[in-house]
Length: 115
Image (cartoon, rainbow, N blue to C red; front, top):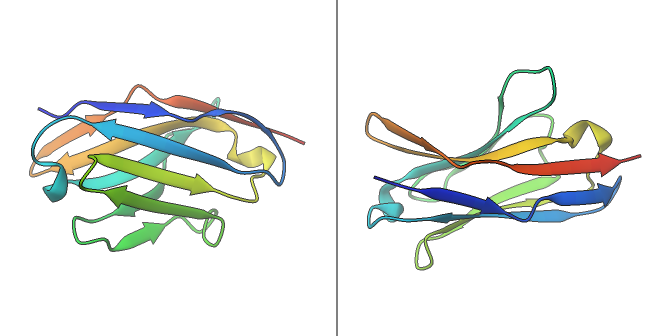
């Protein structure tokens, strides 16, 4: 069982930066396929970025060049550095982890970008 807890959301002006953190429980962290998703009001949840157990990253086109996903296996932590934020980045951001056929989600953290 893996538990995920996000932190770091908040209100920021357009052009600003935020760093989201996700703390994970469990001894299998190193093997987890990690990701960040987001869901804006009235829209479906969408993929933001992923990172494999070996550090390979993948990004949605809408955030490429602005967001950076990373992980610290020694601390069981996952991060999302968000720069040059835009109002359309406003959403609830969710930490995600996958291992085998199991998928785990955090509770979400709100990010609001004002224009």
